[in-house]
Length: 398
Image (cartoon, rainbow, N blue to C red):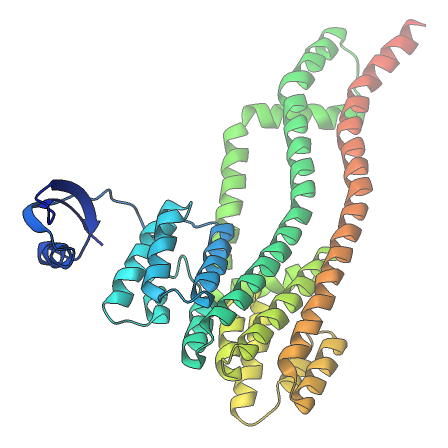
């Protein structure tokens, strides 16, 4: 909402100057009249342009949601609560987004409609749950439940990403070490061996050939790596490529188990939260499919949605997809039969959160010795290959 600076006289005739949020100058004048003040001057304040499309940290969204829930539960009007939140958020982007939400709500929009205009801040799941809370008159409860869901989901994502940091760092260090050896160290040994005029062992010849290729064609190596990365990303953006790569990721030993368990946890927690908040199963499955994070899981969920629309159960098409573990299928079937599907889904999510912890621990414990052996074989092998001719030279001297 635009800001205006004003100068006005109060009932005692004293001049006062300040800034105020308003739609236009007429709105400013109307607000001042309510305060029994006489307008002297009103000027528009040049707005500091802040983008509403930047990245907003999940932590800020969670804090916003919890505070919003607390304010509504305390009896504050929606507009007043949102206005307070727009002034105290640490994220500049979220501040601007919230101010626009305040303006839309004051103009007659529902909170969910106002939030839906900012998908970078509020996901489809968030908007649908808020809409269900508004319709049921339990917005504060829904927001509290939503904040808890986002915290657990964010923790799950961080666990999976954390499992990938260690091997990424090790492989990066190994790549840098290999490049330094090939570019700077091996050529020194090569010159020494040429001066000696001695026949070189095969391992030494291979390492020297690698060094010559890298130093003479480094631009081709960089172009090849960049091209491979670009090609994989471009292929992943296609429907067939996304399905193939996501399927390969799920079939990868150890890592695939972590990804599958995290996807099951996210699916069950998201769907359980939506159903318990009053969102229909069909709409909930559509939202859940979009947030699955894996095309194979997403297709299985959408197939389940189509079957339900045709009168089938949720568990039957999920079982046919052969993606979800039998225990998950059985528990969902029991939840459907007993009418406690949302509670059963939450129990499954809690169980698989612990399973993800165990799987991540197992992955890291396996990767540590593998990475150590890899570094020892590659870097150590190159060093040994360089020292073999030196050993031969020593033997010849003896």
